[in-house]
Amino acid sequence: MSGVDKSSSSPAENPSLLTGRNWFERLLIRLIASHTPKCREVVRLLSQSMDVKLPITTRIKLRFHYLMCAWCQRYEKHLRALRKVSSALPEHVDDCCSETLPDSSKEGLKQALRERKPE
Amino acid sequence: MNVSGTGVTDAARQSSSSINPDGWVDEHGDFLYRYALMRVRRPELAEDLVQETLFAAVRTYTAFRGISSERSWLCGILKNKICDHFRKLAHEVSFTDLEFLQDEMSHKFIDQGWNHDLGPAEWKPEAEAALDRKEFWETFRSCLDKLPQRVADVFMLREMEEMDAGQICEALRISQNNLWVMLHRARMALRECLELNWFERKSRMNTKSDERRR
Image (cartoon, rainbow over all chains, first blue to last red; front, side):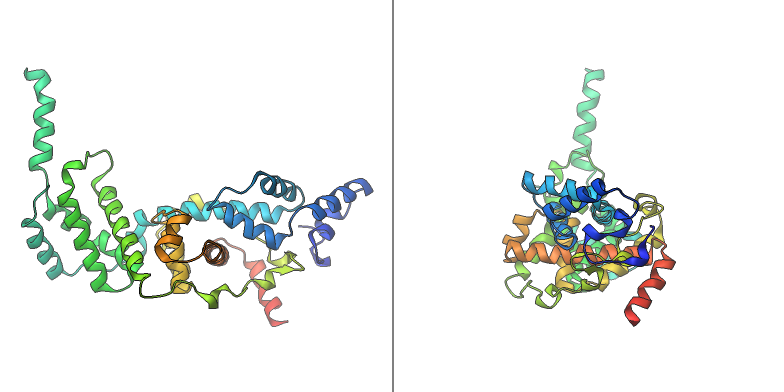
């Protein structure tokens, strides 16, 4: 990313977005920045969007925010990847855990199960 | 009769005689135990959950149609037992983790925009490519272990047992706002942990440690 050295405070002044742009593009970015939530708020909303459907106006604001902020867009992508990974964890539990059910418990279980009948 | 009857006989044989709890213990016992242990952390509790799961499996075996694999069927039952466990636990302990609710990621933002050196990096290769790697799951597990216990519980109920937000609030007796904050913090911390420990970003890591020293 170019222009990272001049890190600045708000997305509107994000040098990687504003350097080399003409006055009109800069105006557009400032306009978007002033009408969409700040990144800190965006990441909070993105997490929320994984649990409930956000209002349409909020979703539109997020889309506009992405026009000027690649980080938040990437953050959303990562949240989706995280969900995929987490939901796959149960089937990969043998890859990350090595504990075993003690043999005595297994025998006890089998014994108890033999006395049970399907309904 | 012979031709059309074969299917019926097979189905009848399947439902009555192929029930094999001994086989479940041998083939899936460790798997169920590992999952349960990861979720409840105490061996005796995990064993109880495995036992409850298998008892329920015997009881409901006639309803199992073999559409999913035996393992995912048993895993589904265990997930329900885990949800019940936390529902009961919520009567005894509070799931509102106030300590973790304090903002820990302030350094990532400057005046509410991303601090440029610490913004999310491109994940290459993508997460999907890592799912077959044993080391990846070990890394993910250690990231989960770093979360405060209650926050990890809530996150896993949402993403592994796949309870929806309303069900979790009701089961754990927490407010929706509280749930969102906990999930947000959990996701933020896990994303960060995976990025640092799995997806290579050595140069960024150096920048980060400089940042901390400042």
